Image (tube, rainbow, N blue to C red; front, side, top):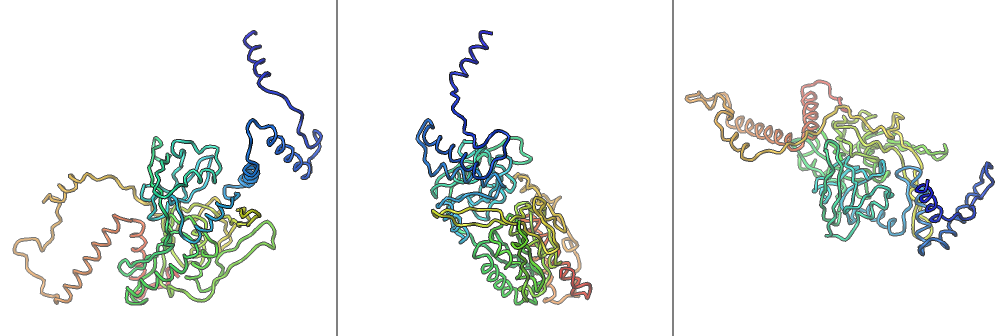
Length: 451
């Protein structure tokens, strides 16, 4: 009893009960104005009686941000500096680690690392959870607060603690901050296939992609020499809706691309394709994975619903909402979720993602012992042998020198394709699909498999 009384007395001495700050009588519904009065009373009490002086501006910002972040993970308040940073990012150059993040269960979840950035080079993966930044937990921080902790001067070091599915214990990753310069889209030729890699949707995405496509087609010797196109949207976290519409329109002649539906019917919009197809009807494959989100899913959904492309890879992220950035007084802005978007068939992929037509997992790369690999390479027992290796084998006299040269070139291409399977199995699979479709078309079979 004595001990209990002592604890209770201590609690009473340490807690003073002030007068009530109720804006309405108990049980009576509060009007909006009464609640705003309550907010004002609380603000004044904090300003005048908190144990330390407070920054009134930061207090208001925190209240606004708390109101917005309570809605969903993507609504937030952008202070003047954050708003300017966002505008710089959409222009394609900014400082940081090079990751797109969201918030889940209080922790920071990586949507995707950006190609060629410090985060990607350090091995950060889509789906990773960041639990600590420089040893300090991010649990309880807002998304913007956590992102602020990851920002810093170019060249400075940051240590993030990663929790990864399939890994027993969290582990630390050291990253050197750098200036992130994004080339939104790149192109290259793999055999007779044009591969378009789109990493983000900023102001430069469509112009970059159009230029890369035309350059690769010219390198191939013209569109007639191209058997198809691969649009690689893996680990593309999204970006501008306008750019997603332009990229989709680039490969569609007609029909709906995407529709957005807000709270009020009059706020709904529908976007349609205009005539013209940069790929001139050639077969297409779209590559996606769990890091493909938002604008990437708009493009994938449009091309999939119109049967313009075969979708290959793993299920996408599932961000099917539209955020509108609304400038506010004081040079800040509000990022507010204002609509959901729907693919041409009317499906919302919010929290569901887009399922590929052909599921192809990226194989896990196991570490190779160099000494063992070299021993196997040199082993006579493991070396492949053919008729031509046998002593005294007769020669093939039915082929001309030109035919032999062409055969050797085909064999070299096959070896290069095999090498690509080791480097990027999903991309190699996509290219193989286009090779198969091209073979069917050239043999007079079904020529519209991807149209």
